[in-house]
Amino acid sequence: MIHIFKSYSTPPVILLSDGCQQKIIKSIDEKNSHKFSYYYNHDDVKKALEEIYHEKCGYCESKSKHIASLQVEHYRPKAKVVEDSKHKGYYWLGYEWSNLLLACPKCNEQGAKGNKFPIEGIRIFRHSNQSLPHNSPLIDERPLLLNPEIDNPKEHFIFDEYGRIKSSTTRGIKTIEICKLDRDKLNIMRRAEIIDNIFAKIKPLIIGFQSNTSMPKETFIIMLKSIFQDLENMKNPSNSYALLGWYMFNHFDKFVKVHINNTFQIPIIKAWSRYRKGKL
Image (cartoon, rainbow, N blue to C red; front, side, top):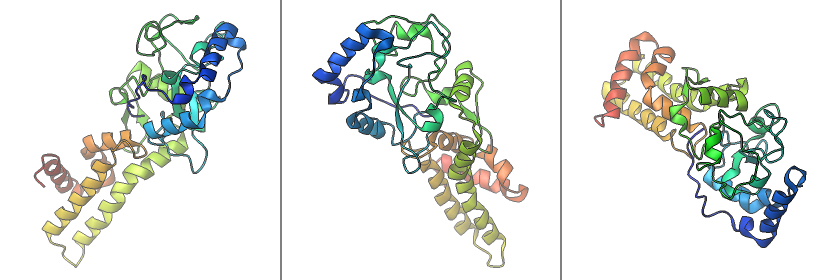
């Protein structure tokens, strides 16, 4: 998960259409019995979200379009809330632009996020004219599920040397649990995309430096610099698992000490330090 900027004041035109506005009024009148129509899931809404979210799941950052379509997901469930049987869903937010995110099927399925929405505060049961998630009354619910459009994931998530996601905050831990962000296949994909990718480039370089070809140290350093640039690019928001890329970029020595043999750990870490200071 990375922080996403989305302008709540400029929703897709389809959500401002007369037809959608009538649906919003109807959803408020009918409450939990309302049958939600295609407006929130319209192609224009999905395309807008795909652009904003860099065609990635808002929770796990996977680009899954080639495997399974990304879904328009309701941050606050529109028709049911797992944690409170008395709550029939945030029906008034079913077509609300600020409540629509992009998610992959694995994060959004019933075994994962689904209709889960745990909070620490007092749950809102009734429609309010104020529907933005970062304002009262919704913010007063104190959601435990992180919102990529409101929260800064960098404050909640860290990774181990193999790409497994961790957290020491209540909301981070709960978000990992809800969206299953530590599922095995996701851990493998994150590691392959970021960690294995980088060290697959460094290890042959070390072999070449140790071989009879006697690669000059200057060449070794120049090639390391190119790899460091690749790692820096991995934290670009448009890339899959950019948060891991960012974390690895800022804690590279931690990963080197696990994935590189002792002989070369110090020179690589020193070169990395010089690169970070702009001296390589």
